[in-house]
Length: 414
Picture 1: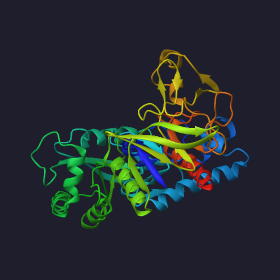
Picture 2 (picture 1 turned 30 degrees about the horizontal axis):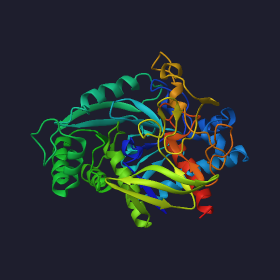
Picture 3 (picture 1 turned 180 degrees about the vertical axis):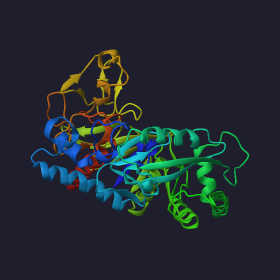
Picture 4 (picture 1 turned 90 degrees about the vertical axis):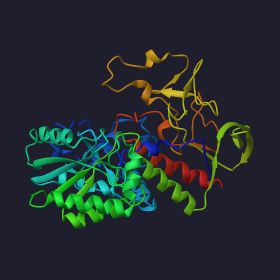
């Protein structure tokens, strides 16, 4: 198998969570009552025929479709060299680095203890890093306490905050997330950090610590375990906002998986193709000053939406490589302007974010007549129509589930 990529994918922007599906709940509602992601998933399967979950589940029953999607995420979590965690008791109520709380289905294991839903009268210390103003312990402490006031159950009894220097880069202003993570990856630095933290905690009654999502790029599990052991408290990172260290961890884990499975990786841009009728023969790749011709029996397109370049609008809306049509709410997008597919209120769902390729249940893209565009072409992820990856809490779930379907059927043609 060959992977062609001109740049890192959206995984590098990941918050640390894989969202499957979520109901429209806000952080002011009762965290303990947030339903399991499978409840929202089943609602999608029942009511939204054009959602990718529903499309790849056509011909299957509700239980079969739901089970397949769940199993796809479970397989991905088991396969990747990055520990992921989920909850059987409902959506996890995860703290992020903005101090707000969001439902999540899966999170990196270093974040598992940041699930407020599982807290019982917790006494939490929120630790920020000097020189990293994006994460302020005092701001997050106040935000969590304000949200706790609206909860019927006491998840958080009280919270404190602390700003600490990062050994190895202390005394510097405007540190980047990667600089801090790389510093903490070095054993002498996180040991010194842990010792200083233990000294601060002496005589205090905290039972858990929340930290920025910066605890190393390679040694995260060891850092979290070591901090938990020496402090005797539960330790967790919060979720992140892009660009993020957890996203970089995920990207590197995917790269290690490719290497382990001996996948060929080509850093290049696909700029053209050869086809005979409805069968693709090869891609033309452009890398620096070189051009290559890559032959294959099947192809999977996962070009993302707008940032990834999977959808473009020049004179009309098109997928740029194969010239595939773009669909929105079951209709072809042609010459519409961006204002025509945008709503004035930025807080509500934007139509243009649901635009994309239309597929059949085998994940094959369809042409403007609703017919299969190419027999050996498949598509997956954000490039698909029928869902809003930015606002519907299902971006990772759709990417993994549709990728599983596309990969399965593409492999059958090899």
